[in-house]
Structures are given as C-alpha cells and as structure tokens.
Length: 251
Image 1 (cartoon, rainbow, N blue to C red):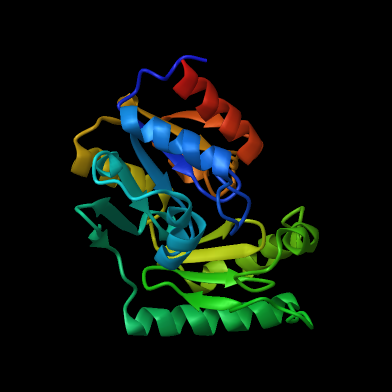
Image 2 (cartoon, rainbow, N blue to C red):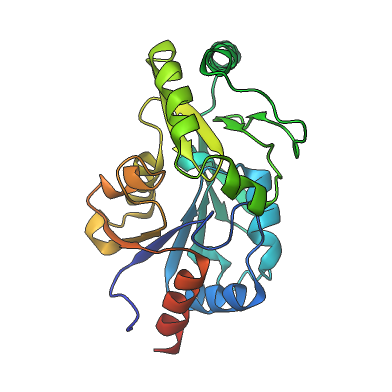
C-alpha cells in the first residue's frame, strides 16, 4: 500500500499502536520512527501524559532531527504536546477543583447505583484524576490485558454505568474508552476537538488528514474523530496497524 497522500496521519494509541497500556513492540517502534521521518504524525488517546511516556515515548529514541514531526494529544485531545527540544504543552483544558469534585461524587454514586463492586484484586487506581480528564478503570490503571478483556467484553456493564452517570453530568462528555474504562471531560472536548485543534494549530485542513483507529464504530472511543469528516482507516488491532505502517514505509 502506497504512503497516503496526506499532510498529517493521526493514530489512536490503545488497541491501535499497542495493546491496552502496553508499550509498543520493537518492530512497531522502528517502523513508526521511519514514518515520522517523512510524514507529520499525531497520536491521540484517552491515556494521560504519564501513560504516553511509559507506553509510547519510552519505545522511541529521542531525536531532535525529526521528532518535530510528531504531536501528542493525551486525555482524549484535552491536551497537546509538541517537541521543542523537550515535550512542551501547547494547551490544556483542565477541569476546575469544583468540577472534579462534581465528577467524582457523581461517578461514585453511579457506580453504586449500577451495582459495581470493586474486584478483590485491582492493579493501580480505579478512579484517576488526569487534570483535564477523570478516568474510571474497573480493574485499575495497570491491569493485565488478559484480565481486562474478560471483564466487560460486550460493554454492557459500562453502558449501564454511563447511562446512569450522563444525566448527573449534563455539562460533561462521558465516554466508554479502552477495554475497561470510562472517560469524563468537558462537554465537546474529545478526539473531534483534538482534531480541530490540530487543524487550527498546524494549519492543516481536515481533508489533508488521515485517522487510524480500532474503535471507529458508533459509541467507540474513536467515533468522535470520524464525526469531523476526516478520512479514516479502521484496524482490528496493533498487528494490523503494524502491517499498514510497514507497507507505507517500505513503499
């Protein structure tokens, strides 16, 4: 497959460039670095900045020569980072302390109403304040992917929780994300918002962008990106993404 005739290629992270919360493998990292030598690339994910550092950046060599071609948007596009010799925050849509308190209280109440019970074993925080986003992870932030896949594969549990939570938070976006998570941000601040920020800050029109993600279906955490009208490629997982990137760089 030929390298796309686009000025910006945007990737989801979890389930697209790597398994949930897992680092990219060596082959993916090498091909990704080859891609950003020749294309501007953005990565957008519900994960926070610390997650980007451990899951994504730790797999890449730091090179000022072409790292400027890469833009990162953590927490569903509520923040943007660009390389200026180090990673510099370009904007952040932070939740206020009062908003965080409202979100936390509503989330706790909704979990109780939905009948959620904390598992006997969890891996890290279940509710995380990411500054510009509050994220619920049913098994903890660092649960093994095998355990995550078993917990709510058909999204029924999270649909029940979000159905109770959304009326309590009418001025926020409440989205199912990842494998076990629910993400909460300001209303309208999501991957679509991030793409429009890329458009305005990089001066690249949406028709000159391409988005690659694993959850572009209605209700999926990549679906907001699709609503912008950006050209999209749906992938089944990191192995399919790897083949895509490998074909591009070899072409």
